[in-house]
Image (cartoon, rainbow, N blue to C red; front, side):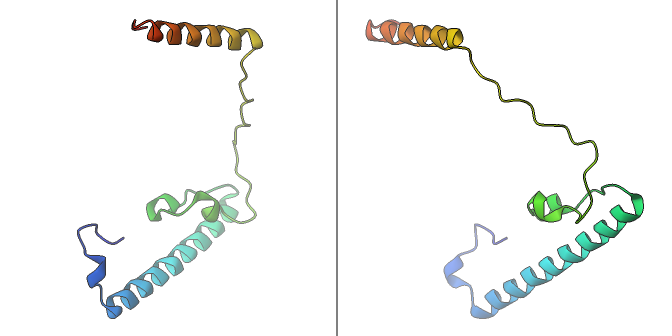
Length: 106
């Protein structure tokens, strides 16, 4: 990551090439680590913690291939507001607006 104090206009072409090489090295290392984690997960019969968070990589790309996560909780059902609840909220908001128009603080 380039420091915010660094003036990006003054970066030389050699520096840019070096940055690109370092990014490629990081990507190759991350792929190698992911492969090792996949093998470990296969041997252990489950999932193994990943280093994705350390490298700032999206979690989807760091999941072991072909290994299902264990202990995954199902998504909670989306909460909804009843028509009565909506009516109460609308009435309360209208009261706040009326108080504001009247010059009072609600």
